[in-house]
Length: 410
Ligand code: MEV
Image (cartoon, rainbow, N blue to C red; front, side):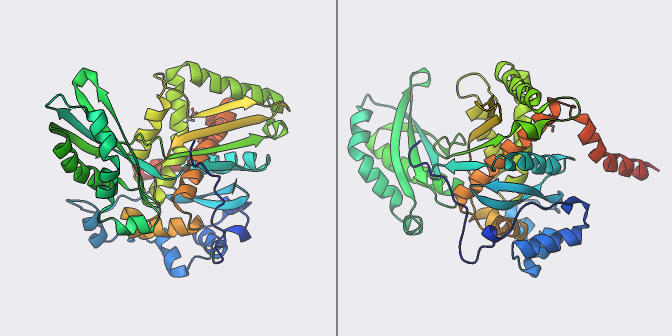
């Protein structure tokens, strides 16, 4: 993949990320305020900003009105911290906003297993999103020659007025096109490096602007102008190794669990019903981090599932195998359109605190952290499913929900 790099998470002078360990034994037994004090100290978060983790009136009426129409309030989600993550040599504490019991515990457990094998390694491509300009030519022109001749002019036109994007190192990276015979439509793809912004508005703005110039060059009826959520030029990957000994339990030896996890993966690779649930488990890890950081989880979901289906057959988003030493190895690769500046990420106080907790990563590093959590989540689910089953751990954690529901009834 062009320009793919392995991100070394922010080691800025003021970043505490390199100075703390994400191993926090007993963290789960503490009270909320104690937990908050601990992560506040570790990540050197200002106590005032740290209040935004648990101030239930954080998203005030003004912000609600800025974010959406017809706002009447807020819908709160629990916010937790997944521990044990060690990615590209650094420990990271991961904020997760999610309502489902056992998700945060499972992510932390998956990260603990991977940690025994040296932690996760991750990499990503530059943050290049893609927009589509769709048109119906009304005359028989040689659009290949026209677009080839005018590519540089179109790129310059797109950049006009985008000085801030250019100054940040972003901009249009290429223009390509294809003709869809079935609907007699030409589609122009505009690849844009949006740097640390998710960039949906930027991409849509550029596509609408370019479409006007395109319609002067190619007589046409204009179709749609919008980004694609299948942003397969904006990829993030992660991998890990789990020593076989770490996987043994009362019922199975470590090597047996390795084999059973690989079989579980193969089941998903050959059965779309299982692949769907396998991937739901991956998204259990991904969505909560996307939500906690103020990013668009519908965009991430759409891109992830479409990418899982790129061969025409819906496939698991992670792969698991046994290596030459008999240890378990796994990886994940997904399009990941997330930002660390702009939009809700900048405006939502909790998202700001979550970004800070992560060590203020740039968009690429955040994308890598997010897919890593998806891999850890899947590892934890498969380990349980392939040995004692999911319900033992899930139900013991779910017990609190049941008791509360009973109390509410009476
Ligand atoms: C439950 O939210 C997720 C799992 O079903 C995932 C899986 O089956 O791999 C446990």
